[in-house]
Length: 112
Length: 111
Image 1 (cartoon, rainbow over the protein chains, first blue to last red):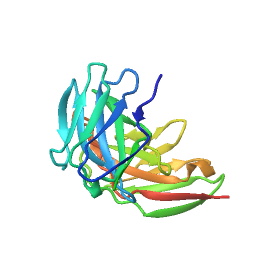
Image 2: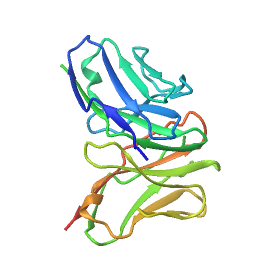
Image 3: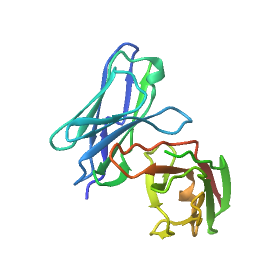
Image 4: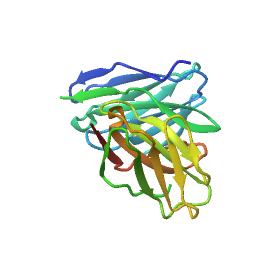
């Protein structure tokens, strides 16, 4: 059984740029959730995707967007990067109906 | 989802049991108690969850009080690798699937 994987592991961008982060869900899982974790804080829910549709969203602006593909992998896109977007971005997969979420190792984004 | 209260930090001697408490006095009847941990700079790791009954798996035991207003995560024989931030989360088990993380308890296992 393959766990949740994320790429890249680290990324440096400058303010105003756009970034795409990728997540492959655990084998058999059809739901992907994204979280942002600022330094020293707990993860904050961004949104969730199920059957390629957004299925719930946290308090994040529209410049945070996502996609889910037929193979259940997912992308998180952030436009017009701000310094405060520097964080660890976590992806978690689950099986709809069995609600335990399993997290990937995260992508650490630094915005300069 | 109900709020949880955890002590910000705890120490435990290696080899001893680590007992991590969590208060969730406003929990509703259909909300589950979940525990995750996060080792430095890694993604959160699922540990265990339960509704009413005590639960045990290969990692830990979860003891939920009869009134469900508090719970305790027990690591029976803590090792140095158990040093992490432990999060207690109370949530409904339905679609939407959001986890609301609080501050957690920073457990330091000492030799």
